[in-house]
Image (cartoon, rainbow, N blue to C red; front, side, top):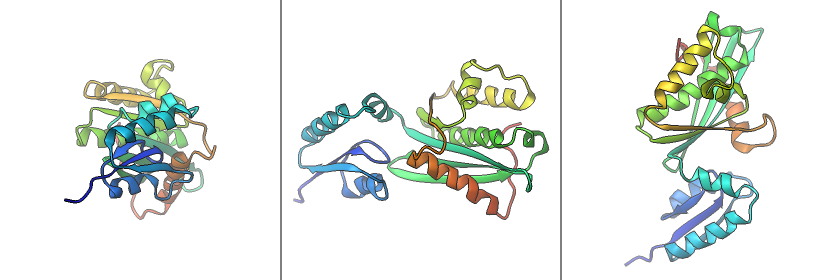
Length: 213
């Protein structure tokens, strides 16, 4: 009988203990500074993981990330000359790294520039979660309004932000949605990847309809 191993990932795309090398590899391949170790006992793997996370300043954040069914990193972009806005979304789900991008030119949303892209990215992440019947998701964003409009810190005063608010509040009836703000262009690997996808979206040969209206 083939011996079973467990792989603890303390720093990678997703934190946790995985029961196959393939699943572990998905979390560490291409991740700068990944930290992981192989064990033949699940309890020992968990013990090592807990210790390594406790040594990190981001312990509580990393620990909480394990509790979500998916983590979505979003970013938006806008180009004045082309009159397009875009989003880039990276979702960690089911030991996979999923990438999405779209561009839009809806007239009523163009006036909000890259914020419209941020909103569409957040909505795309939630639509993905709903379609896959997830119970929880963490939205990582670099524009504060993504969170503030939803929790009421900012009042949604116009048609577009009200549409976003209503969509997110309705979605919260079906799942736990949490938010985390990160500084844009601060060498956060996943946020930077979402930014790259948002820029790549300009080269798409089709224009999408806005995801909410």
